[in-house]
Amino acid sequence: MSKPTITTTGGAPVPDNQNSVSAGPRGPLLLQDYQLIEKLAHQNRERIPERVVHAKGSGAYGTFTVTQDISKFSKARLFAEMGKTTEVFLRFSTVAGERGAADAERDVRGFSVKFYTEEGNWDVVGNNTPVFFVRDPVKFPDFIRTQKRHPSTNMRSPTAMWDFWSLSPESLHQVTILFSDRGLPQGYRAMHGFGSHTYSFINEAGERHWVKFHFKSLQGIRNWTNREAEAVIATDRESAQRDLYEAIEGGDFPRWRVCVQIMPEADADKTSYNPFDITKVWPHAEYPLHEVGILELNRNAQHYFAEVEQSSFSPSNIVPGIGFSPDKMLQGRIFAYADAHRYRVGTHYEALPVNRPRCPVTHYHADGAMLNDIPNRGDAYYEPNSFNGPVENDRFAEPPLKISGDADRYDHRVGNDDYSQPGALFRLMNAEQQKQLFGNIAEAMQGVPLDIVKRQITHFYRADKAYGLGVAEALGLSPGDLLADAAE
Ligand code: HEM
Image (cartoon, rainbow, N blue to C red; front, top):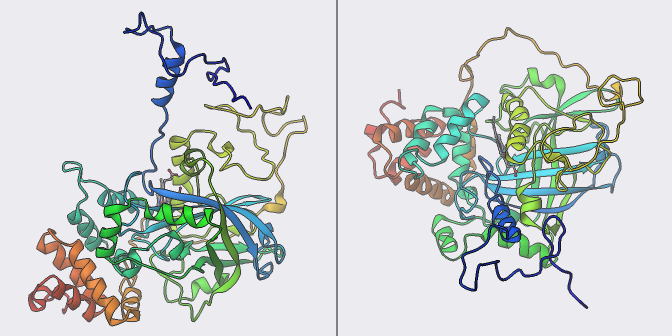
């Protein structure tokens, strides 16, 4: 069978793709060789900005299948009946490293799921941890600065990280997870995922419940120690990408149990902790996990750039039956992501194949760079109009949410207990896990000025005395001197 002829992007056949047009066999080249110019110019535009965080990632398609009926809590169509399946795309990532970073690094992992539901895309843009480092979005850019490179040395700075964390005690819970054995998963299949924020479920009767999403790995949890990870990185910087891609290619489809914790709307005023604070978990004894369905990944992307790099997730993508909550971090993220996509990918990012909803899309946005579809609304190109254009439908309105209080900047540290939950987590660890935690923290603190180390150890000590003393010992420091402040 004859092979197709290469064409230019304008569709013209290319007579020679091996030799440029030159004046004589030795050159120079002629400017009229537009095929050469097109190749070089296109290559100059082949990269888009990497994600400002979570730049290195892996993605795959799959399905979500309902296994339990939760329609009394949410009218979201994807939960409508047992056995119902919805197509999904999931992107995993590390947070701090650039696009070429090694996968097996100690870092939080991103866990972003796009559910292509019949009433629009629902994105859960979560992590492999149930909590986060800060609880107010105004602190996020500073936090990320401490994770990225120092402006002068262009190296990562442990001093910046521990300075920020020690001055932001709300980070203690997430710091404890990051330096525990779970801070370095063996691959994306071997970890849980969490929506982390509190969202809401709305049912047909217009009742609201608060909800947290959990994705429990059916592959089990497997982690590397620092030494094991070093050996992995020495020979393979793409260990997580390889593990995921090869498992799916081989038909060994990874799966997660999708579970929810559900809180009646009125309980939010009664809990001893703020249920909208992302640095806190909801105790499972009070709000147990309910299984909702199974998430399975079963198809690799065909083209990494087109599908994984251009995939664009946003917590603002919700569907009827699923809503936001007063969580301040979530509120900040509702703005940040779609704004990032318009810059990173382009105005019409949601029309790209990986992002495009699998249901009809009827809005009035049109112009802007790279409009691919040709709008055909005729005279109905604004709203309201008299020409039968799409209209709103109050069937999809959420029930009102009661809020109160004076508009002000409230100190989020006042009356907020940053120590109990990290202390409880520490006490859940066995002796070997606690030892690993001390060692991982001590390694990460090398070169950090003593006053910063001391300030941070005080936080560990306040969470649990053994936690503070263990880290001090791993650092070879004298507890008596270090803990003078903490004991007060
Ligand atoms: C990616 C901002 C907090 C999980 C991103 C991106 C931005 C961003 C701008 C890049 C988006 C892109 O270019 O596609 C923020 C802000 C936050 C915040 C402003 C706080 C106010 C969080 C939290 C979580 C999280 C709390 C998890 C619970 C992720 C994940 C990605 C991401 C998983 C990668 C998404 C993907 O796979 O494409 N974030 N973030 N972020 N963020 Fe956040």
